[in-house]
Length: 118
View 1 (tube, rainbow, N blue to C red):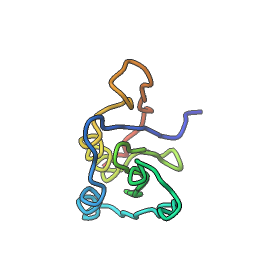
View 2 (cartoon, rainbow, N blue to C red):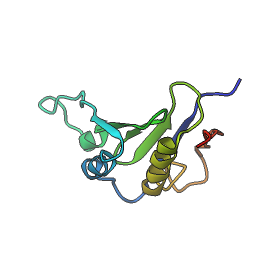
View 3 (cartoon, rainbow, N blue to C red):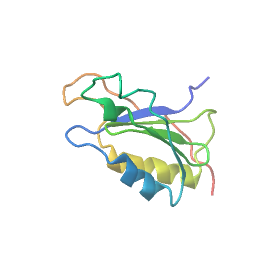
View 4 (cartoon, rainbow, N blue to C red):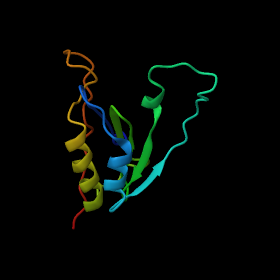
């Protein structure tokens, strides 16, 4: 039995503007900003803004996007539709790396997937 599709991609030296990326993706996909669970009144953190995330949905493919990482996934293993492939392509253009740091460990390998007939 094959596992569900899940793939993590990263950026290294630059942050992704989630608001701008969300606006760009919202023309073709459903985008929902997720609530930030922290309470800035009682919390001191240098990376508090790094927790901001949005959920982007195509047909069967979904992705969490944040400033430094995206997680692409499917709830049920099904062939990718053309919209799924477009979302995957766009996010792989923004998040260029398959590991969190430039060192030679902690790779993220992409699960094999099928594409639906058009």
